[in-house]
Image (cartoon, rainbow, N blue to C red; front, side, top):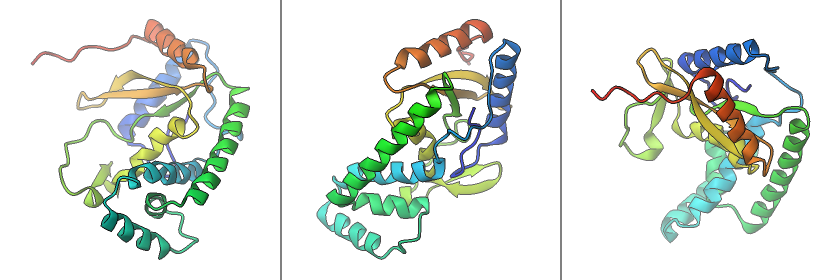
Length: 218
């Protein structure tokens, strides 16, 4: 179980739901670990994910926007590995640097293979909070409030990147609700190409602990 991420915290309501789900699992005889030396470095993986993701998005930027982005990336401190810096680098990533990033991804995949030799699935939050109000402001200016503290809006992508970057199957299913009645889910991540493993885990969780409950019509 990964109940939080080094790049962005998990809200109390989400952690509470995750803890409750772990209690149910252990009560049913499941062996659950809270940490493992086999887990890849999630900070480094998040930075790599944002670089590779933005390299795809940046390819469609208008020429003048791309040039501005490239100039901004060139002005970054090489030692700056913040998520914002990684996004800027990614949006103007050269082909050479993309190939180097792809090599890093290959190493990451091997580390996940080593972890899944010991564990069946990895559980992780889907989002750091339950659903939040729509924000139609300019994207770069957006922030997300987590338990009263403002955080980088785009850092939420780190949770999606846990499975997406190395190409692992992830099955999402509900595990509870917040005090406001908003649904909270978890992602069960399985080994590469073993989609049926994560799907089967979600199926068993639903069978033993209950699954989706339709919201009231009013």
